Amino acid sequence: MSIAQAAAKAMLSDALLQDGSGMNRISHLELELPLDKVIKYVSVGLPLMLVCMAFAREISLGESAASPPSNFTMKQASYVDTYCWDSLMHHEFDSEGNFEERSLWVHKMFPYSLMAMAVLMYLPALIWRQLVMPTLSSDLLFVIDELDKSYNRSIRLAQNILDMRQTTKNPLTFQYPLLERYMQCKQSSYFLVSMLFLRGFLLLTFMTAACLYLAYFHLSAFLQDEFSCFVRTGMLRDQNWVPELVQCKMIGQLVFQVISVANGAIYVLLAPIVLFSLIRLFVWDTTFISIYEVLPALDLIHRRRLGCPLNDLNVLLLFLRANVAHLKSYGQVRL
Image 1 (cartoon, rainbow, N blue to C red):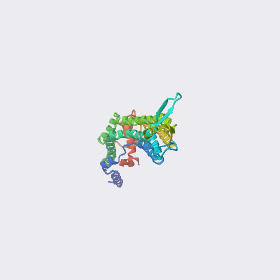
Image 2: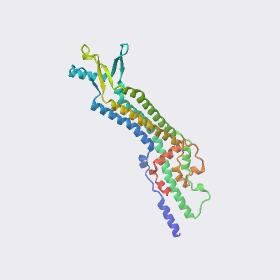
Image 3: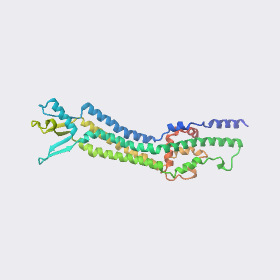
Image 4: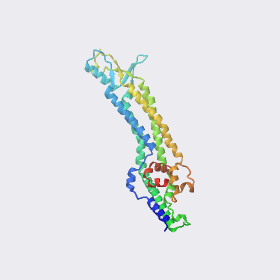
């Protein structure tokens, strides 16, 4: 054996990958795309952060401030202030002198509506976690493991060729088509891509509903920061000297308005990002898999046309790119 042949065999032996722990890979796999993670954290975290601001406003400033007559005792003034906030009804007389009342409970329910928004925004991610992640983790683990094995098989093929000093006339003798056939089967599967579309559709629906809720209900109610409260009730029912209506002011109304506008604006800005995450599924991401086309065990691009990208194979390619750190062979093939 010549020095060149010995050196070549040594280099090929050093290029072989060591077997890794599959369980360790499972625990560290990225089962959400980076862009989907950002969307989840912003859409869920924003309302929760604003809820904290809303409750902090109530604790620091109080709910409402009534303006009772100066001859009210402290106990009576406290009763009026508590009653007006608990009832949160605006009373007024119309042009014909009829007594009308209108509920302003939207102010009291505002922090809780933000919590409901956060729950709705997390629902698509929860569906993905429960229904998709178990299948996706199995698929990714198999493909990652087979890509590394295909790399090792290619190295051993080169060692065999070097030993025999000739090539075989039948390439299938040295090929391992399991991974390629698996990926071709994924071209006829639509579970992952349909779940991604469902996740995006639900997010867009919930964001649209949240923006409409804030615009048509909250913004219209927030234009009124004062209301007239009917106080002749309870301990003041029989007090004829007590006025029927007491003017009350919503403390911290500006904080609610800023929170409402900020939440709606972020959701409006987030909607195009959600749309982009769906539109990218209409384009093949072949940058990753083209690197492995040099291996004889994988030749999806050159042997056949990939066809329509709306299938599970394209989704797997996106997740393989996100999990490239777990591919030991990736750095070797790129060299």
